[in-house]
Length: 290
Image 1: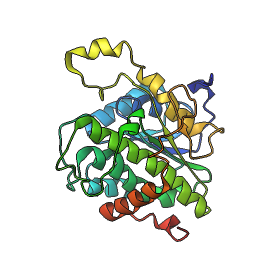
Image 2 (image 1 turned 90 degrees about the vertical axis):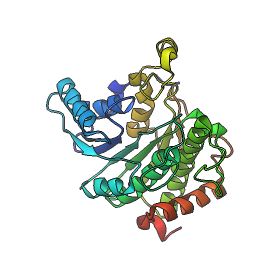
Image 3 (image 1 turned 135 degrees about the vertical axis):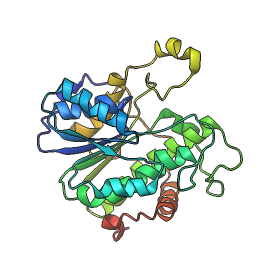
């Protein structure tokens, strides 16, 4: 465990960052602290009203903050492409947004919602923004995962989960995919000689709108971390000079070991190829060396 706090974030003046799902949960304090330390931040959110409200909240907290709203629906690949096309420079991408523990639904493109949003949406977004990231020395991609990944299983013959759907098992699968993606992106970037850091985080159990447990929520929230505390792992991964890529940063800023499944190169490579086929995003900038 480290004594690192948000006050230890270095000066980010001149840096450009995107935080998905930055209108609430741990995404909002993540965007806030990046802006507080000088970064230009895009609050990427599906809901324009909530996204713009978050921008105003950050501006009230940090007068003069360079922050703007960008509409992004990770459950719609057309929206992902429109958003990516609107960005002109980028040093830091925080893949934070997510859905979980929901009844079976599908994205606009027909993917199971948790896998489609949490993994495929971020896979496509990262690939589309990769050319911009590679123009920035030391650029970083931070992807939020979870301890739940340890229960995740990927059946490539049932990616739509049209049978055997479970709210928790579907969520665990999406979080496993986040870790597999993080580690495979690092491997491919290194093989291509790209100056890119790919790192995953685990914010711990955090009291956010994501945790929807009805009347028990106030009681359970007493045992959960605040969104500000939950955001620290993302902020540390995004800004600390101690991060070099391939780490999984835990809620106490300790380096954690992903499950054996998450460390499977063969599984990661297959998931990457299937994800590229499903999204049409090929990561051409680092593809030739792989």
